[in-house]
Length: 269
Image 1 (cartoon, rainbow, N blue to C red):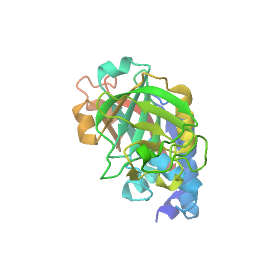
Image 2 (image 1 turned 180 degrees about the vertical axis):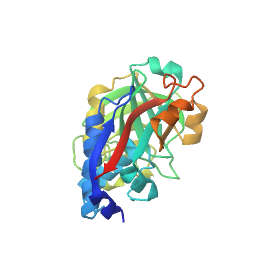
Image 3 (image 1 turned 60 degrees about the vertical axis):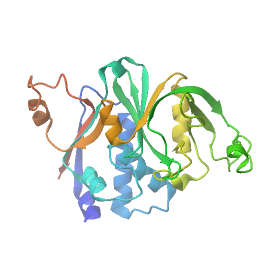
């Protein structure tokens, strides 16, 4: 059904809104790549196809997993969609701000109040969950050594292919929780799952990219959707015309709408 629908899609019209993601070209390219994979028969065992799916889900505020479920199918074929993020007013003043949505397994980067980029991640398993907390990045390292968790495992030297931290580390503040960070991985198929000891794992290419532009002292808020909502943060995808979104505001215009990445209309020939 989905494969046949995607094959019938002839024209894609992109309408960009005021609050446009500066990485929109990459997002659209990834969406087209995934659509092509699905139309030919998606294979989750192929890492490139797997990553295309995970990135598409993150970019569209869909729960990140390795399943093309109803939500993902709808985002691929729906005629109209809007990706919406809301953050507290005071956080819009920051040059960089990171939110990690534990429910959806998405790391979102905001730049001066606008969505900059979204990445899929892996998080802590049930026995060692990633904590809900407002962290700050306190250090960064290339090719970090892995200490083996205090003697529990054999240490691994930095840069080694079996290093669980990958090739980049962004350490989080330690005033309440210690030892947590954002890093790469040595298990590429783990991304999109709850499998870590509490740290935030990223696709190696993604964390290397993040490392280059995110500075020390960047605030990182981590929480479930319920916790994030209490902190004034919401991330979702909505399917309706932009005019209806604007009409729903008290003023009747779009000036106070949430941060919006893109509005995509897919038309069939």
